[in-house]
Length: 306
Image (cartoon, rainbow, N blue to C red; front, side):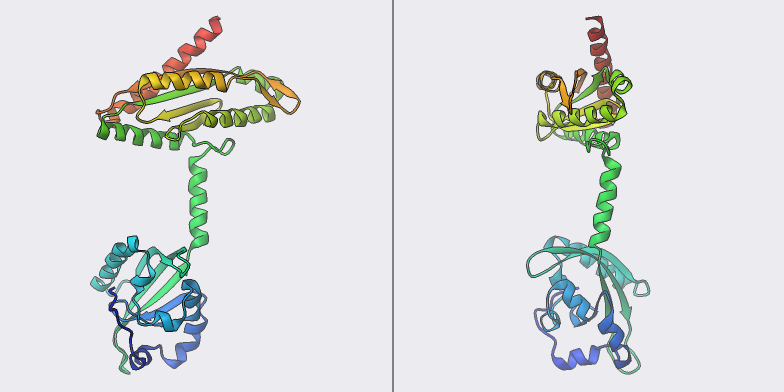
């Protein structure tokens, strides 16, 4: 699809227009429909597409389909168009975005089919259906978010924690920077659940998560691994800096929680694992988590002896 820089004259538009007996369906289709030349110049558009793009047919006709797409997506659109031309018997389906006059962008699915020259002399052309998929993309994003986050605290879950840690280790491998992991476990949480009830336990977890977020750096990722176990991924972090963060957490998150009319004492055990940069992520992933986990249990054991 290429932009020709010129507008098509009235005769060309009329010659390429859909037959009269299909005009009503074309005009009243609920989705955007366009007729284009083989190289993607818009020849006719229906009212639904005018509404979607926020531009009248008089302005659209003669311009390229690519003119409606953000610049960073043009290359992918060209590749999809080339695939359609290479295999004209197979419709093209391509997700992209279109730009409206106010510079807002709408996610769309474009389906294009090749139509050969008809017996009545109409030239070969492409029929393009443009579907607004804003709601679908929002639902997809919502489902992805739910799959990656803890429903109670809103923190990343174990799956997203693993992904963030892997990316941190990959960065460490590329840039030769260390990565640290903190594993945090709430002390006496079972007693809170048993004596105050699970609803109170949930409130404690939510309140703790809020405190946790309040002391982290922007580059840190806090996650709830399950139960009363939390973790923090610290990219490009030296062991000494991780120790400072652990101390800050210990003083900031262990003040008694006041929930409703009840005061809930809170204690934490923290373990730190650190690995140097430069090594392959696969060799470090299990090691750094195991180091942090072992250190957390050692911290918890020492607290019990006090």
